[in-house]
Length: 574
Image 1 (tube, one colour):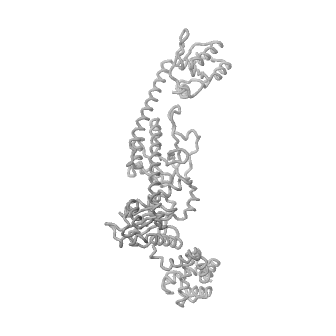
Image 2 (cartoon, rainbow, N blue to C red):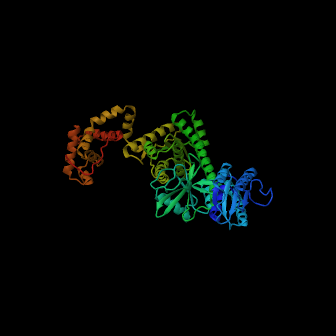
């Protein structure tokens, strides 16, 4: 025990008065009770005296304490005795010797028993620390999962815990158990993540209260708490200093941390940080190799086709019968980063987790596939196997795309992804072209349908022809749009009409005025009036096949260029 803790116990349990504080970090090995003659004060022990002294006697006592290395002098003074003078107190402070006054009723035996009990407690916590370290470190190994370590931590702490990685993925110790389910449910309900700011107010308190401490400051663990209403508070501890490797949520409701819990939590944080770092390094290494393969495949810098197939087999996929390429892309990633204000380590962790999520979902649907990251995308090559034929792959790939979108929404509720699918190719040498098709489908789908789109190359129709024009000569597509629908878009935006929406519906109904009127809940004469207005604005007669084709292409050019007007709240015809 150190002097600081010793002094606090004397104050709290024995009513002591601290006259001179001394050096709080000095250790207290025991007491030396004053006896007649010299040599009664052993080196480093606390001097205990109970006789009233004159000024010179107190000076000699302080000098003796300093000479013997005693950290403190305990004075058991009779009632009414004021103790040392101001000059003596000043002398003690200069010599860094604590002077503590005790009531005359305090027995030496109580002080000795207290020191012995504290020594046993500290030794007990030390043994507990060794045991906790061994138990948690024994779970480590190549086959260890974050889930298994979190379960071990929960059992050791005897309370519900939830592990959160740097991008907000939650890993409960046992999601089916009542306490763990309640904790993770509260985190989902209030959209709470320690990895990002939330709407929940952090509890106001002094900085020193942000730590769970052992007595005398022997060990401390940072613990933050957030209030969620109804008197309920949730607690979490960062795993690591500076940029955190993750966070551990702990259920402390009506069950605060005891000293032994602080020791266990100390080791839990160290082991969980190590496992999160190992998981990150594993993902980085694996995705780096896969990313290099995808880059070489797309660029065509892979040497021979045989070498390409060998590399794919090394990564666990057989592409000899060809494959379908699927691209998963984060929607409006720049805006997402601006909203979240993530630092670079968290950004890279997010990309790694997305790639891992795609791999996990693909494994549920296909047995022969290969994933690899590329910039903000995750590329997935899906090949035939004993369980999926080439004909079955396109339909099952669309099912997988929907699964990935649902999984990502559950993993990170404020992030969405779009998916583009190319056509299946039977020739491995044409996989780079298959990637280009998936990329075109992705871009067209995002431009036309917005975020969370799923698009296939087959369904792009004439869009892909116009998209090629947009890539090769964007001014040419811009000119075509100006010559066709630009005046109608300007008219809609100026007057709040729905001419573009009417035209889109009319063409979608095979130029049927009756069907269009029924779908738009308008009279057919109203539809006819709007179509005539479009003819006036564009000089294109919608009744003529050639002009109708130009208007159809104009609509698609408008969508690819992102010029579609917003639909007004009410319909107005002019």
